[in-house]
Image (cartoon, rainbow, N blue to C red; front, side, top):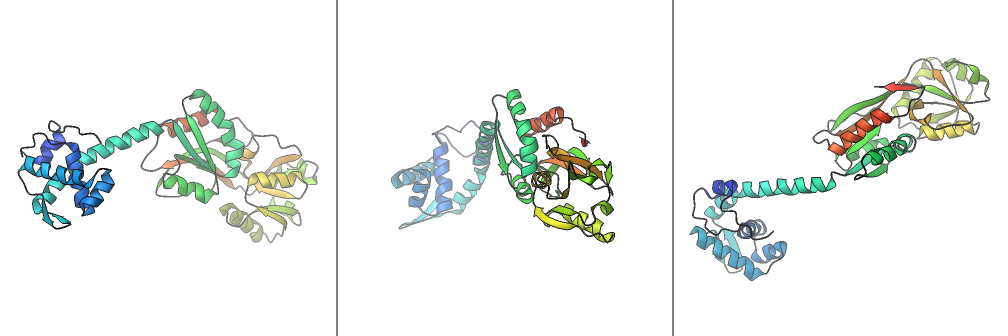
Amino acid sequence: MTNTEVTDEPPARQATNGLNRSGLTLRELEVLRAVISEGKTTAAAHRLGISQPAVSRAIAQLEARLNRQLFHRNGNKILPTSEGLAFNEQIEPIFATLARLDAAETEDLNAKRLRIAAPPTLAHRLMTRLIPGFLKENPEASVHLEIGMSTNVTAAVADENADLGISDGRTRHDGLKMYPFRQAIAHAAIPADHRLADRDEIVPEDLAGESFIALTRRFHQRNVYDRIFAERGIERKIRAETATSIAICELVREGMGIGLVNPFPVSLRPLDGVVFRRFSPRVDYLTQFFVPAGRVSPIAQRFIEHARRTVPVDAYSHPA
């Protein structure tokens, strides 16, 4: 930082509590804090990027201006006096204010960069459709799209490593603020030439003995489906397990069997050879955006609003 005069600033008036501070510089106050923090003038010099003699000179000048002894010196050791500690505590509001200003400046520099975290299906089927339009509306902005497991997406946003997340899973976290986006119900993804493709609705009994493509067991919805079939004593031939609805639908298209999926947003892109039929009993899906609970960046809010305005119409979901 430069040698900025702080004698007329209100925080400095409060910090020095009426002491004669004519000519006090911010650098001298920085040196005081560094020496108290580091315990050595050499370490303080290294931290501030100046020479050790410059540190000693700044401390001597500060003591002369205040007419107070701020440190005890004993050879290479330098220890703050009670007055030095008290003065350091009094000037803390100055540095707290500067830290807030620095944070605000950094936030302003990053205000045009949006970090989005999304699981694969929502990333590939939805976000890649929304991002181009958003950037056209906001030409000064940029987007970083991180694709990962739902649990990693949740953690990234809660830890503020991402500004915005999206999921259709059970997302509950005290560190997140939720924005419901789309509602849908489970559908069976069926090969277009399968005997069940002509049905309007699929029930568990229809899938008895059928080749089946399931979600992996780490997903809550897998447990929901397993319980439905178990309660009815119905066995499926689980031929494959996978972690995404896209993969389920691709395997269905290859004729490997039938799967149960959230039709949003996989149905937003053509899936030749696959039809979707409503599954009963009803299983609900809620797709939600989420942001860190303590901070909603303006650019994340704009993206949510853009998504609600421009999401393509589909036959399987509606606004939440």
